Amino acid sequence: MDAPVRDELPFEDLTDFENADRGFIAALVPGVVRDGEGRVVYDGDAYGFLEDDCPGSAHPSLWRQARLCARQGLYEVTEGVYQVRGLDLSNMTVVEGERGVIVVDPLISVECAAAALALYREHRGQRPVTGLVYTHSHGDHFGGARGVLPHGAEEGVPILAPAGFLEHAVSENVYAGNAMTRRASFMYGDRLPKAPDGQIGAGLGTTTSTGTISLIPPTVDITHTGQEETVDGVRIVFQLTPGTEAPAEMNFLFPERRALCMAENATHNMHNILTLRGAVVRDARIWARYLDEAIDFFGDTYDVAFASHHWPTWGRDNVIRFLAEQRDLYAYLHDQTLRMLNNGLTGTEIAEELRLPPALEQSWHARGYYGSLSHNVKAVYQRYMGWYDGNPAHLWEHPPVELARRYVDLAGGAEWALAKARAYVDEGDLRFAATLLNHVVFADPENTEAKETLAGVYDRLGQGSENGPWRNFYLTAAMELRKGAGRVTLDTANAEMASALTVSMLLDSLAVRIDGPRAWDDRLTLDLVVIDEQRRHRVNLHNGALTHRAMPVHHTPKPHAGLTLILTRAELLGVLAGKGLTGIETDGDPELLARLLSYASEPPDKAFPVVTP
Image 1 (cartoon, rainbow, N blue to C red):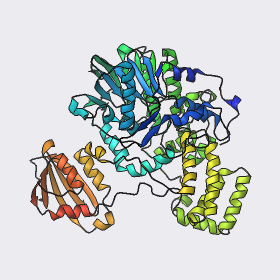
Image 2: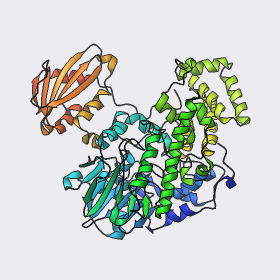
Image 3: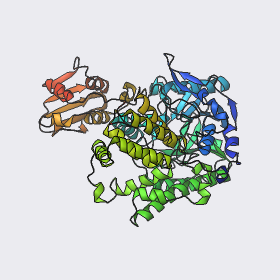
Image 4: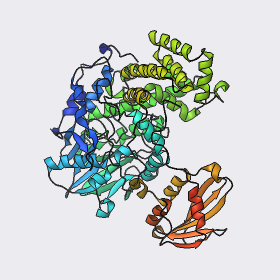
C-alpha cells in the first residue's frame, strides 16, 4: 500500500488535465446543492483543498485522480453536446435537439439533476427536456430523473434505456438494496470529512450525493445493436452491451454531432468486475469483446468519445487507442486469472502474483482508482469457481465471531493478541495487524483499546491506498470504530422506487421480506387481478416460500384461490404498504391477506454493524 515513487508513473503527462478543462463554460457558484429543507446533499466546494500539493496522508496517484474528478461545471463536448461534471458521482450530458434537449443520465439525486439542468439553462437558454436516456441500470444514472422531468413520462417525453433496464435497476436497488446501500456508504465515503486525511474522492468521481432518488420507467427499449431512434430531430445509433459494466447497458453514437457515448464501459480508470458495495459478478471477457466491437462498429463516424464519468477523449486515433487499451485491460484480467486458476492457484494467490503488462501499468486510465487488480482478480475467480477455493479447511469454517474467539484464545487472550498486533504494526505488516485486531474486536466488541488500535491501522491502510473505494472503506471503518455507525441517509427502497416497479417486481420484493421460519407451517393461495395490465397473478405461500406467476386475466388456475383481489396496480401498492382493502373488490376470505402480510419482516436496519459484530 506504500505510495510509489513519483518517477514510476508519468506525472509529467498533463493530457488528462487539458482534456478535463477543455470546453469549460462556467461552474455552479457556490458548488453546493441542497434539498427542499435546506440540507446539503452535495458539496463540490468541499474539495477545494485538492488544489494543494499531495500530502503524506494520500497516495500521489489517487490525489491526481481526485483533482481531475473534482473539476466542476458546465462543459462543451462538441457543438450541441454539453456535460455537467462534478455535481455528483456521475456526469449528466445534455444534447440539443430541434425543440429542446435530450438529457443523458440524470445523476443520483433529484436535487443535483435539477441544479445541473439549471446551470445548463443559465448559459444555453430555457430549453425544455424533450428526451431522456439511461445508459445503464445503476442508480447514479437514473436517480435524478424527476429533477429533469418532474411529471415523468406523462409529459409525453420518450425515455430510452437498454432492454432489461428496469429489472436490473430493481434487483440492485430494491431486492438487496439495504445491504448494498450500507456497503456503499463505506465505498464512497460520503459520511467522511472531505479533507487531505479524509475522503478525497472515489476514483470514479467525487462522492455520491444524498438527495432524493427517483425512477421513471423507460418508454422505449433498445433491444439490439444497430437500432436507430430519432429523438427531437436527433438521430441516435445504439450498440447494446449487456453483461459488461452493468447487466443492462448500451453505447451510442450521435452521427450528426460525431460524438460517441461509451456509457460506463470505458472510463479513465480500471473499473470493477465486482464492486465492493456488492453486485452480480461482471463478465470481463464479454466486456472486452464489446469494446472491441465498438471500435469496429462505430468506425470513423466520431471525433470525440465521452462517458458517464470523467472527461472526454478527443481525436479518433486517441479514442481508438483508449478503447483498445481498455479492451486489453479486461481481456488480460480475465484470461490470466483463468490461466493461473487452471494451474491450481486460488483467487487470493492469483491476486498476489498477477501484474499488468508495463504498457497498461503506465496508462493512467488503467490504474486501479475504482476497481483494483487485487479484487478484480478475485471476482473473475468467483465468477468461474465460486466462493470456495477447494481447500476442505475452508469448507465449513466458523462464522466471524466464533472464529475470532478461538483465534484470540489461541493467541493467549486479548492482551497478548493486542501486543502481538502492535508488533506487526511496528514491523510494517499492516495487513496482518488488521486481521489480528479484527479478531480481537469481534471476540470482544467492548475492547476500546483494540478498536482504537485497529482504527489507527485502518487510517494508515486507507491513506496509503491508490484505490478510492479501498481508501474510503478503510477510513469509514476507522470512523465507525471510533464513533459508531451513525445515520445512513441514502434510501434506494423509497416510495418513488416502488412506484416504478412492475407487479412481478413488487411481489418479488415482498418475497424477500417473508420470514421463512415463521411461515413454514402455513399454506395459502391468493389471486391478484390487476385491472390496468389485464393480468392475473397467482400467489402461493408454501413451505415458507412466496412464489407467484402471471397469466391472462380470464384464466382461472386450480385450485381455487382462497382470496381474489380485483384492483389497479396503484391500489396494490397501497395494499402491500398495509393500507387495507377499503374500496377494493374481493372474493374470498380477506383474512388471508392479513395473514400473508404478517409474515413480512420489519424494514431492515440501514446502519447494521459491519466492522463490529
